[in-house]
Amino acid sequence: MQVMAEGQSQEDPKLQVETARKAFEQEFERFARFAENSATLSALDLGSAEAEQRALADLRTRHLGKKSALAASKKMIGRVSPGERAAFGQLVQQNDAEITGKIEHVEQILKSHLESARTDRERIDVTLPGRRPRRGHLHPITVVRERIEDIFVSLGYAIEDGREIETDFYNFDALNIPDNHPARASQDTFYTTDGFALRSQTSTVQIHAMQRRGAPLRMIAPGRVFPRYA
Image (tube, rainbow, N blue to C red):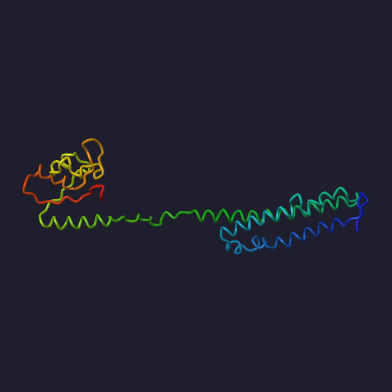
Protein backbone atom coordinates (compact mmCIF):
# COMPACT_ATOMS: atom_id res chain seq x y z
CA MET A 1 0.00 0.00 0.00
CA GLN A 2 1.13 3.61 -0.66
CA VAL A 3 0.40 6.43 1.79
CA MET A 4 -0.67 9.61 -0.07
CA ALA A 5 -0.13 13.22 0.90
CA GLU A 6 -3.80 13.42 1.95
CA GLY A 7 -3.25 10.57 4.36
CA GLN A 8 -5.51 8.16 2.45
CA SER A 9 -4.43 4.58 1.88
CA GLN A 10 -4.76 3.69 -1.78
CA GLU A 11 -3.37 1.24 -4.31
CA ASP A 12 0.20 1.89 -5.43
CA PRO A 13 -0.14 4.54 -8.20
CA LYS A 14 2.79 3.01 -10.10
CA LEU A 15 0.90 -0.26 -10.15
CA GLN A 16 -2.13 1.52 -11.59
CA VAL A 17 -0.01 2.95 -14.39
CA GLU A 18 1.49 -0.45 -15.11
CA THR A 19 -1.95 -2.07 -15.14
CA ALA A 20 -3.23 0.58 -17.58
CA ARG A 21 -0.20 0.03 -19.84
CA LYS A 22 -0.70 -3.76 -19.89
CA ALA A 23 -4.40 -3.33 -20.68
CA PHE A 24 -3.47 -1.11 -23.60
CA GLU A 25 -0.84 -3.50 -24.91
CA GLN A 26 -3.30 -6.37 -24.81
CA GLU A 27 -5.89 -4.48 -26.89
CA PHE A 28 -3.30 -2.92 -29.18
CA GLU A 29 -2.02 -6.32 -30.38
CA ARG A 30 -4.90 -6.30 -32.86
CA PHE A 31 -3.48 -3.19 -34.54
CA ALA A 32 0.25 -3.74 -34.04
CA ARG A 33 0.18 -6.36 -36.80
CA PHE A 34 -0.49 -3.65 -39.37
CA ALA A 35 2.79 -1.92 -38.52
CA GLU A 36 4.74 -5.18 -38.35
CA ASN A 37 3.45 -6.86 -41.52
CA SER A 38 2.39 -4.81 -44.54
CA ALA A 39 0.85 -7.89 -46.17
CA THR A 40 -1.72 -8.03 -43.37
CA LEU A 41 -2.79 -4.50 -44.15
CA SER A 42 -2.81 -5.08 -47.90
CA ALA A 43 -5.28 -7.91 -47.42
CA LEU A 44 -7.86 -5.52 -45.98
CA ASP A 45 -10.54 -4.27 -48.31
CA LEU A 46 -11.84 -0.72 -48.04
CA GLY A 47 -14.74 -1.56 -45.74
CA SER A 48 -12.59 -3.62 -43.35
CA ALA A 49 -9.92 -0.92 -43.21
CA GLU A 50 -12.51 1.70 -42.32
CA ALA A 51 -13.83 -0.57 -39.55
CA GLU A 52 -10.29 -0.98 -38.16
CA GLN A 53 -9.84 2.80 -38.25
CA ARG A 54 -12.99 3.29 -36.19
CA ALA A 55 -11.93 0.60 -33.73
CA LEU A 56 -8.55 2.31 -33.31
CA ALA A 57 -10.30 5.61 -32.60
CA ASP A 58 -12.32 3.86 -29.89
CA LEU A 59 -9.08 2.44 -28.45
CA ARG A 60 -7.60 5.94 -28.29
CA THR A 61 -10.64 7.20 -26.39
CA ARG A 62 -10.53 4.32 -23.89
CA HIS A 63 -6.83 4.69 -23.08
CA LEU A 64 -6.15 8.40 -23.64
CA GLY A 65 -9.54 9.99 -23.07
CA LYS A 66 -10.69 11.98 -20.06
CA LYS A 67 -12.13 8.90 -18.39
CA SER A 68 -9.18 6.62 -19.09
CA ALA A 69 -6.99 5.01 -16.43
CA LEU A 70 -4.04 7.07 -17.67
CA ALA A 71 -6.00 10.30 -17.20
CA ALA A 72 -6.79 9.20 -13.64
CA SER A 73 -3.08 8.58 -13.04
CA LYS A 74 -2.27 12.13 -14.16
CA LYS A 75 -4.66 13.46 -11.53
CA MET A 76 -2.81 11.46 -8.89
CA ILE A 77 0.56 13.13 -9.55
CA GLY A 78 -0.17 15.97 -7.15
CA ARG A 79 -1.21 13.57 -4.40
CA VAL A 80 1.96 11.46 -4.46
CA SER A 81 4.54 12.19 -1.79
CA PRO A 82 7.02 14.93 -2.82
CA GLY A 83 9.93 12.49 -2.85
CA GLU A 84 8.28 10.24 -5.42
CA ARG A 85 6.29 12.85 -7.34
CA ALA A 86 8.91 13.59 -10.02
CA ALA A 87 9.57 9.92 -10.78
CA PHE A 88 5.87 9.11 -10.86
CA GLY A 89 5.09 12.08 -13.09
CA GLN A 90 7.84 11.02 -15.46
CA LEU A 91 6.43 7.46 -15.53
CA VAL A 92 2.95 8.71 -16.37
CA GLN A 93 4.23 11.01 -19.12
CA GLN A 94 6.40 8.27 -20.54
CA ASN A 95 3.46 5.85 -20.77
CA ASP A 96 1.27 8.57 -22.23
CA ALA A 97 3.84 9.36 -24.93
CA GLU A 98 4.39 5.67 -25.68
CA ILE A 99 0.70 4.89 -26.05
CA THR A 100 0.07 8.04 -28.11
CA GLY A 101 3.01 7.28 -30.40
CA LYS A 102 1.88 3.71 -31.08
CA ILE A 103 -1.68 4.76 -31.84
CA GLU A 104 -0.63 7.63 -34.09
CA HIS A 105 1.77 5.37 -35.98
CA VAL A 106 -0.96 2.86 -36.82
CA GLU A 107 -3.43 5.67 -37.52
CA GLN A 108 -1.09 7.02 -40.16
CA ILE A 109 -0.62 3.56 -41.69
CA LEU A 110 -4.38 2.99 -41.88
CA LYS A 111 -4.95 6.48 -43.27
CA SER A 112 -2.42 5.92 -46.08
CA HIS A 113 -3.96 2.53 -46.88
CA LEU A 114 -7.46 4.01 -47.02
CA GLU A 115 -6.38 6.86 -49.29
CA SER A 116 -4.72 4.37 -51.63
CA ALA A 117 -7.75 2.05 -51.58
CA ARG A 118 -10.16 4.91 -52.34
CA THR A 119 -7.93 6.09 -55.18
CA ASP A 120 -7.86 2.59 -56.69
CA ARG A 121 -11.64 2.33 -56.42
CA GLU A 122 -12.20 5.66 -58.17
CA ARG A 123 -9.49 5.21 -60.78
CA ILE A 124 -10.62 5.17 -64.41
CA ASP A 125 -8.63 3.32 -67.04
CA VAL A 126 -8.94 5.59 -70.08
CA THR A 127 -7.40 2.90 -72.28
CA LEU A 128 -10.41 0.60 -71.84
CA PRO A 129 -12.99 0.62 -74.64
CA GLY A 130 -16.09 2.65 -73.88
CA ARG A 131 -19.48 1.13 -73.30
CA ARG A 132 -21.53 1.10 -76.44
CA PRO A 133 -25.12 2.30 -76.02
CA ARG A 134 -27.70 -0.41 -76.39
CA ARG A 135 -29.41 -0.34 -79.75
CA GLY A 136 -33.11 0.38 -79.69
CA HIS A 137 -35.68 -1.57 -81.66
CA LEU A 138 -38.87 -0.82 -83.50
CA HIS A 139 -42.25 -1.33 -81.86
CA PRO A 140 -43.91 -4.59 -82.99
CA ILE A 141 -46.79 -2.65 -84.52
CA THR A 142 -44.31 -0.58 -86.54
CA VAL A 143 -42.60 -3.77 -87.73
CA VAL A 144 -45.91 -5.25 -88.89
CA ARG A 145 -46.90 -2.00 -90.59
CA GLU A 146 -43.61 -1.84 -92.50
CA ARG A 147 -44.04 -5.45 -93.67
CA ILE A 148 -47.55 -4.72 -94.90
CA GLU A 149 -46.33 -1.62 -96.70
CA ASP A 150 -43.55 -3.62 -98.39
CA ILE A 151 -46.11 -6.13 -99.66
CA PHE A 152 -48.38 -3.46 -101.15
CA VAL A 153 -45.49 -1.51 -102.64
CA SER A 154 -44.33 -4.68 -104.38
CA LEU A 155 -47.83 -4.91 -105.90
CA GLY A 156 -47.61 -1.36 -107.23
CA TYR A 157 -49.52 0.49 -104.51
CA ALA A 158 -48.48 3.88 -103.18
CA ILE A 159 -48.13 4.63 -99.47
CA GLU A 160 -49.95 7.81 -98.44
CA ASP A 161 -49.90 9.64 -95.12
CA GLY A 162 -51.73 12.73 -93.97
CA ARG A 163 -52.79 15.01 -91.16
CA GLU A 164 -54.16 13.57 -87.92
CA ILE A 165 -56.27 16.70 -87.28
CA GLU A 166 -58.73 17.27 -90.10
CA THR A 167 -61.49 19.65 -91.07
CA ASP A 168 -65.13 18.59 -91.06
CA PHE A 169 -65.03 18.55 -94.85
CA TYR A 170 -62.32 15.88 -95.17
CA ASN A 171 -63.41 13.98 -92.07
CA PHE A 172 -67.13 13.81 -92.97
CA ASP A 173 -68.52 15.84 -95.90
CA ALA A 174 -66.15 14.47 -98.58
CA LEU A 175 -66.91 10.95 -97.35
CA ASN A 176 -70.68 11.46 -97.74
CA ILE A 177 -71.29 11.49 -93.98
CA PRO A 178 -74.26 13.84 -93.47
CA ASP A 179 -74.67 16.33 -90.61
CA ASN A 180 -77.13 14.11 -88.76
CA HIS A 181 -74.89 11.03 -88.85
CA PRO A 182 -74.06 9.57 -85.37
CA ALA A 183 -70.32 9.61 -86.20
CA ARG A 184 -70.43 13.41 -86.15
CA ALA A 185 -71.72 13.52 -82.57
CA SER A 186 -69.32 14.64 -79.86
CA GLN A 187 -69.58 11.25 -78.15
CA ASP A 188 -68.11 9.56 -81.25
CA THR A 189 -65.51 12.09 -82.43
CA PHE A 190 -62.73 14.01 -80.68
CA TYR A 191 -63.34 17.62 -81.66
CA THR A 192 -60.50 20.09 -81.07
CA THR A 193 -61.97 23.45 -82.10
CA ASP A 194 -64.89 24.41 -84.28
CA GLY A 195 -64.55 22.76 -87.65
CA PHE A 196 -61.60 20.53 -86.67
CA ALA A 197 -61.39 17.04 -85.18
CA LEU A 198 -58.98 14.18 -84.77
CA ARG A 199 -59.49 11.93 -87.76
CA SER A 200 -61.66 8.91 -87.02
CA GLN A 201 -60.47 6.99 -90.12
CA THR A 202 -57.68 7.24 -92.67
CA SER A 203 -60.21 7.71 -95.47
CA THR A 204 -59.39 11.40 -95.14
CA VAL A 205 -55.99 10.63 -96.67
CA GLN A 206 -57.74 9.12 -99.70
CA ILE A 207 -59.55 12.39 -100.41
CA HIS A 208 -56.30 14.36 -100.33
CA ALA A 209 -54.59 11.79 -102.59
CA MET A 210 -57.42 11.81 -105.12
CA GLN A 211 -57.40 15.61 -105.23
CA ARG A 212 -53.65 15.60 -105.78
CA ARG A 213 -53.26 12.59 -108.12
CA GLY A 214 -56.65 12.08 -109.63
CA ALA A 215 -58.20 8.72 -110.47
CA PRO A 216 -57.70 5.84 -110.94
CA LEU A 217 -55.52 5.41 -107.86
CA ARG A 218 -53.91 2.49 -106.11
CA MET A 219 -52.84 3.36 -102.56
CA ILE A 220 -53.02 2.44 -98.90
CA ALA A 221 -53.08 4.88 -96.00
CA PRO A 222 -51.83 3.23 -92.80
CA GLY A 223 -51.77 5.46 -89.74
CA ARG A 224 -53.31 6.34 -86.40
CA VAL A 225 -57.02 7.11 -86.04
CA PHE A 226 -58.89 8.43 -83.00
CA PRO A 227 -62.49 7.20 -82.84
CA ARG A 228 -64.04 7.32 -79.36
CA TYR A 229 -65.41 3.79 -79.71
CA ALA A 230 -61.96 2.29 -80.30
